[in-house]
Image (cartoon, rainbow, N blue to C red; front, side):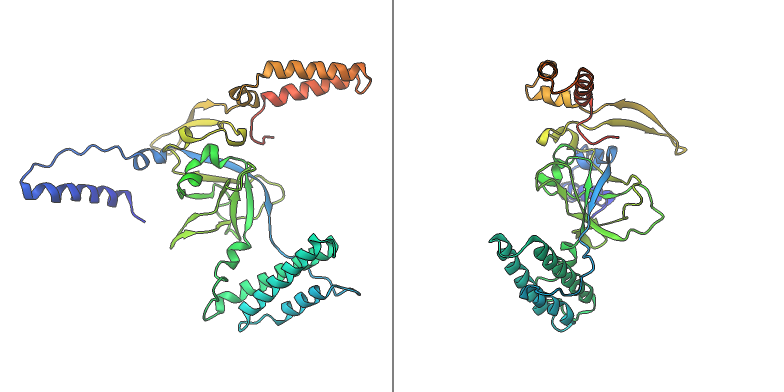
Length: 328
């Protein structure tokens, strides 16, 4: 919520107002302001691997012998209006909770629970659409739209590349780096490929402060979709760790010229799987030898053919040479 110029002006003004009453000459100010100076030097780029969307599917007509709780959910969906949003949400949450309990105890089938969840999602979507026109948003429903946001799975590790997101809730600028002529139509949070629930970005810079979701484009026909996280030049690379054994990423250094052209001046490969395993005391050569012995035993026992043994061994060796992140 402040600019670099404002930051510098406040710093100079503070020193000036302290020294002037004492008649002390103004000094040359030398500071070590890490983020302000070097944050601009790096950007993290990653592709989106997949998306989870919480869009309800079409609700089928009632079937004979349908559970009473599903009927209650259907009635709730029909009755949603601007005057009873809180009541409908409370009722729907209760009916869904009861269905989940029945499923846990084996009293309803998975298909029935799935239908109940789908109707509940339809109810929540309907309520969320009514909220913008409501005079007063009921307590607890103000974040309803955010709870229905998509999850975009990024090919990166928060703990390796953006540790301050997790550690101190640092908010970095995040945006797509292409399709900029298209208006984004989805609201999403970003999850990484670690198995840790903290491996996510769910706080973003908005016009009016921090927002819980990021506007993004829908994935199109299997085409790659890339996001950039900016201002990560301060501390992120040095603080990153091997959580879930995600190694260093590939790095390219870019020199930008005054006319706007640029050159790639240095390229550094990220860690391979073999590199990362060696960091935790698993020696790749030993692993290859153990795998070779196991494969030879399988050939002798007739479980695989010699040609299959060769193909499997080459695939294993190639995987050790490969990147710790998904690659084509």
